[in-house]
Amino acid sequence: MKLTFHGAAQEVTGSAHLLEVGGKKILLDCGLYQGKRKEAFEKNRQFPYDPASIDVVLLSHAHMDHSGNLPTLVKKGFRGKIWCTNATADLCHIMFKDCAHIQELDVAYVNKRRAKQGQKLFEPLYTVEDAQIAAECLSQVQYSQTFSPVDGLEVSFHDAGHILGSAFTDIIANEDGRRVKIMYTGDIGRRNIPILQDPVPIKDIDYLITESTYGNKLHPPAEDVKGKLEELIHTICRTKGKIIIPAFSIGRTQMLVYMLNKLYIEGRICKVPVYVDSPLSSAATAVYDKHQECWDQEAKHFLLNEGKPFSFGALHYTESVDESKHLNDMPGPMIIISASGMAEAGRILHHLKENISYEKNIIMIVGYMAENTLGRRIADKARVVKIFGEEFVLRAQVEVVGALSAHADKNEMLEYFQKCGPNSIEHAFCVHGDDGAFEPFTKALTEIGMKNVSVPKSGESFEI
Image (cartoon, rainbow, N blue to C red; front, side, top):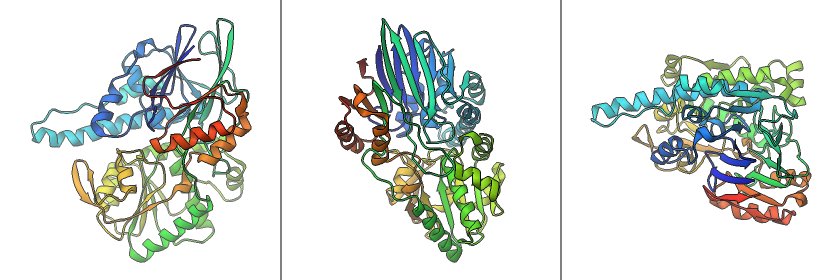
């Protein structure tokens, strides 16, 4: 058996790990790389393995840094099944198409300028048609249901508590009389966060592949988020400014809407209009409504006693491009929640372009921002940022609210693994993290009893 790390190895985006068992090749996730534009352009188009040689994909969840390059994989020759949970399949159906549509629009926008300058025109990574073909490869299973995607493999998905449908991938591999248990975390969720159930512990693990995103950080208390939202909304009600929130369409947007709904019901904020400006967010929220089996007891109680969690009087879901453009002509106060989460594509770029240079506006950062993304440069309060190749002075107030993160922090991950039985783990591989996260996290994993802990490089292989 062999494990090779091809993405999110000593970096955060582009998750892709290749497991080889009994002559079969199993790909764990196939995410988009996000970062420096030129580097991302090349990495997302050129696979370090032959897509046609992959027998099956096991998909942990629908976030683009884990699922977003699957249409490219299919476009370049993959013909197997993509296994995932029911909710993940429903989300991917809309996300693949949306990602392709955004690429087509953004490339068309940029190509107008390039054509005038006589430069070579770009092509989208994949089209809406490519996305539809990839979605047809999705094969869905329920949580805890055991299935055999290839000979010698028994797999089950268990709730990771990260976003709707997110899963820990529990793999029992049989080869030449050896039987080993491999767990791939995808992204580890948090206990007691709104809407979702808590992460499910997996026991008797032999080999572990774990994310490390917040391996050197601790989150502030969750209740701080409602207080901070309340404070910022009072500010824009006074200044007539706007709060611009880059947010992942899946997970973060629903959490924000849920919290704003509760603040309105509790009478803690004025009736400032809230606009969710992303067709994907609207579609994803419908999927959240559909899959109530993934909700925690608090969300189910809210539905019974207060009404729909993702709908209230001041909330508006925009659909058309014209509606989106009109938001930038409207006076504040208002809140605009828009995708993408790292401010690398989509409608959020237009809202930032129009609002980033005005002091009365607030840009609220509510999730992890990978290095070299526009979201990270804003979070770091760079004086000047580039949007669509043009420079803009950052004069808006920037507020970073870490407590909304859907990733477990260092202590939460350690608490989770202690429930799994760390002493049984022969080798742990830490992926999906920045340089600063790995050293403290690997040390902590060793201290709780894991025997060997590695931080693989891109392209590095291990016999297991």
